[in-house]
Length: 113
Image (cartoon, rainbow, N blue to C red):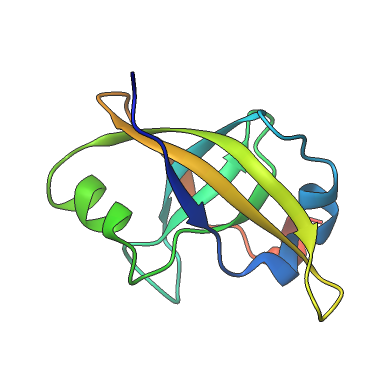
């Protein structure tokens, strides 16, 4: 049995429309966010259709596994819900794998809406 780990995404306030459309169990992909002016090692989470949902936190062990160990990741939506601020948040269920991580080019939040 594959071990699943919860991963709460950050930067979600910029992607509320995409998060509201997510369903628990939906497949999500991790993508290198090449050209990101804020973080040259940024990893974003996106739907199969390419809608950005948020980012893997800089402090997450997932970044080390992907960048330093060359691991891939298989993800599904674990939960979606509104927090005290009214913004929706999203938690992924993630399993390390040998799947390739998608390559993407940075798109600002305003460009993705």
